[in-house]
Image (cartoon, rainbow, N blue to C red; front, side, top):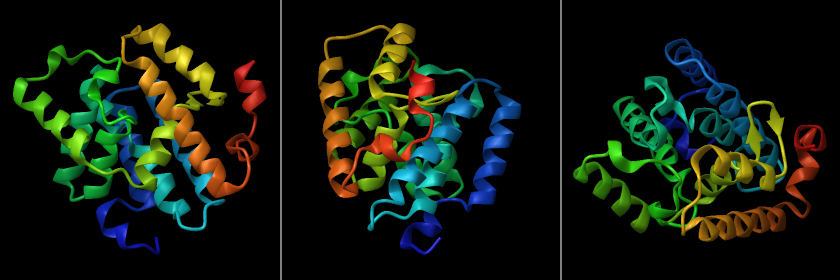
Length: 206
């Protein structure tokens, strides 16, 4: 990886090993979803001159690594953050937190916060409110919304999938608007539709 970030995240081989270990500890669709997020991030990054596709791939593959501790709903973001920080993967740790909050408001998340202590909640809230997202944050947020375990799909299908599993809240519209703004941002960087570089979108959507 030819980038200053290479010291802040694992190599591709290490990422594959971590994901394999996560699958052993906590089997589930999150693993295939993560692989597809990584692939989508790489394919989009390849069309953006200022984003490293190798880094995008690794960050996408491991954005949900907190699920290695079990099916823990929204707390996977904090488990992933702590896991990555312990290994010295600062950039990955950041992605583990930011991927779920594309509008800087944790209230837009559909997860259950009951499992968080007050201190944990305040930490995540403060982090998300104050951090300025870079292109890697935005890219993984976007790819998280178009990758199913079975492959790539229209963003709208993934949105419905998430709502059916977690329900809705009064902040969901803000989250959806931010998603489409991010989509537009990357399409302007690419000079084409994001779907033009993602294989089998039609087959996985319909």
